[in-house]
Length: 72
Image 1 (cartoon, rainbow, N blue to C red):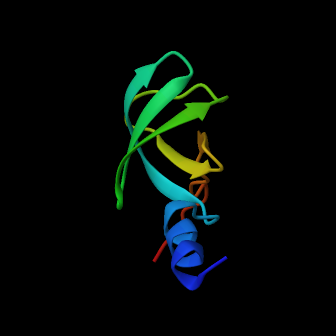
Image 2: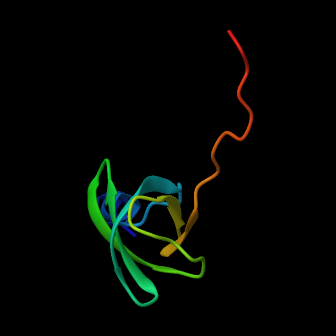
């Protein structure tokens, strides 16, 4: 495969997880606002508008959040 095709495929298919906020829900499909723009993904978790999710391989799962607060 030529360099241009490899570079294009790398740009289109990222293997790093993307984090964003749910802005719309239609059944098992959610719309997520990310730093790269709006993304549509499927979800297996129960999410509501405003939840932070992590998208990996087209599947949105609830993003890990800090559970412990340390006094300063």
